[in-house]
Length: 141
Image (cartoon, rainbow, N blue to C red; front, side):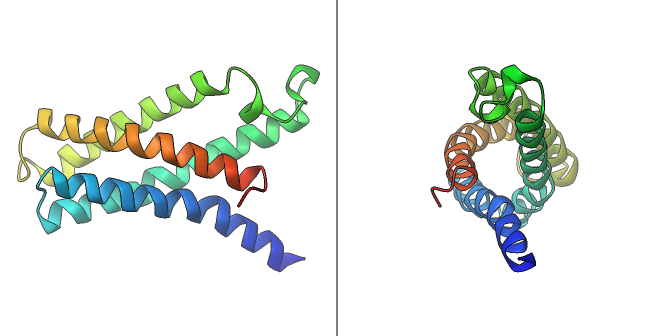
């Protein structure tokens, strides 16, 4: 039984993290970041992606056990989950951008370039990562 809990946790965290890392590092390569810049993108995502996933899983768990209007499958399946996910992603986007600006200290271009990079990376990875997370949580994967 403990094996299945560990396996489920690995899927819930691992699949979105792996997908995000692949997508965002590839996009960063298209922005011509150096190997150091690509490493910074990966490192930032190792911080932000598991935090976001944990918040989403917690909201899902609370929704399944919360008020009756949320008990039909949790927050992740209610109509207002998309705006909530958008808000969470906006917070992650700003956090990642600021971390990249701080870590790279101008070596990869201006803060404006890193903001554009963060926007593109997060829009693409959030879209695909949301579908992957929902697939894992609903038993698709």
